[in-house]
Image (cartoon, rainbow, N blue to C red):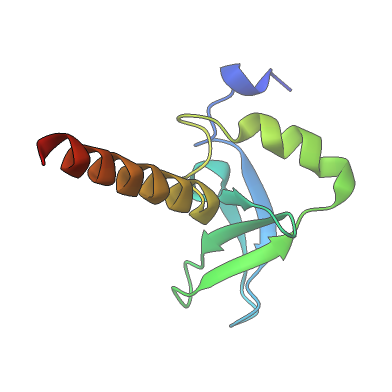
Length: 99
């Protein structure tokens, strides 16, 4: 396997079952997010369109964390909330400056 920064995650898949509809499908890593607490992958099921998740086995966590990069896997909720918090801080700082 190529190094994660040289791997096109559009062409790398994991095969998982949807807990909602039991559909088994190959999901691109580019459409998968890595979440923590507990470590899991999340994706949108192509059959039922629900958000699905699966626990990440400890032996795969190191490799998956290497794919969790810009243009790697999709943005996770963890990253989203971190970004929103940063925006809130920025908005508050701007208000303080302008007043």
